[in-house]
Length: 324
Ligand code: AMP
Ligand code: TRP
Image 1 (tube, helix red, strand yellow):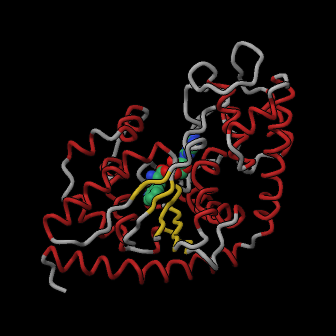
Image 2 (image 1 turned 180 degrees about the vertical axis):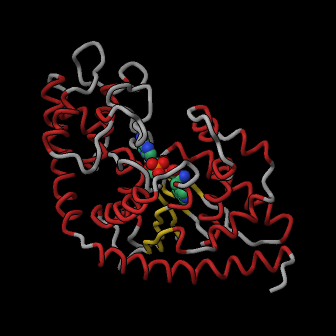
Image 3 (image 1 turned 30 degrees about the vertical axis):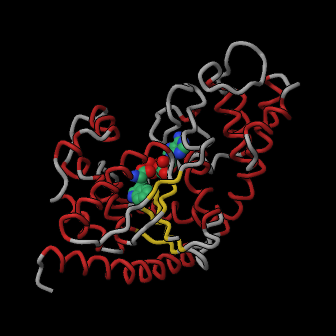
């Protein structure tokens, strides 16, 4: 199957991104034809410092590689290296009713947090639809906050196909049940987020071991003292169980069975051990990567992606009446 996904190069990549998205990507490489993109064109829908954007873009590429995305199996590239994304994004924006974009939850959320909102932010979902549709993608592995965007992508594709003739495959989202929405360590009612000003709410993939341990130790828990799963009754412990299950690649039931006799603090110790065991080797691989090698992976990836994208874009242009 053709698989496509991406992450914005902004801020701190955290364990929610890792378990919700990147770890799924690694698993999907085998037997599929996957493209994983660093979506810098999306990142600039919110003002970015140019130096920081460049740094974060390369850091995100290193994160993919260190997490196990293998350039021999998957195509890794930077969105702005393939102009077809912006071209198809523009075309799709001319076919998307304004009201549908104004109703997007992420747009409303981001808008409510800022004084100035630019047109690109409203058009974020049409660009995302272009990312997906350009490659005739069948499967889009993401966290659950992206489901609405993928729903819009599907209806845009259907609408285009109905009006101009069959052009796009209708893609499907793929979320991992336990890790689709990892919550904040401090406020289990909120999603773990890159942009939360309180760093203690998340475990960043590059946090040193002592910081990881301290953050898990100070994570809020629920009343009572039993390790039982129940996202409504015990949202904080359930979130920690989800993280544990995600890191270990085990079902929730296995974690709860193994942890039944433990106190909260013993459970947190075990969780911290598991997270450290996953992230420290990741960090070693990350630190060993050389910028020159990363750039050459990205260059080869862009070339491959551009070839694939050009055939869909050409078809779209022909169908809408552009002179080729
Ligand atoms: P972003 O940070 O918005 O670029 O998100 C990159 C990927 O991580 C997307 O697939 C998101 O759905 C996913 N993601 C972001 N935050 C979380 C979270 N707290 N839990 C699970 N997945 C997440
Ligand atoms: N909007 C996604 C996010 O913030 C990133 C993204 C952009 C994406 N284009 C995509 C994800 C295409 C999947 C497929 O998480």
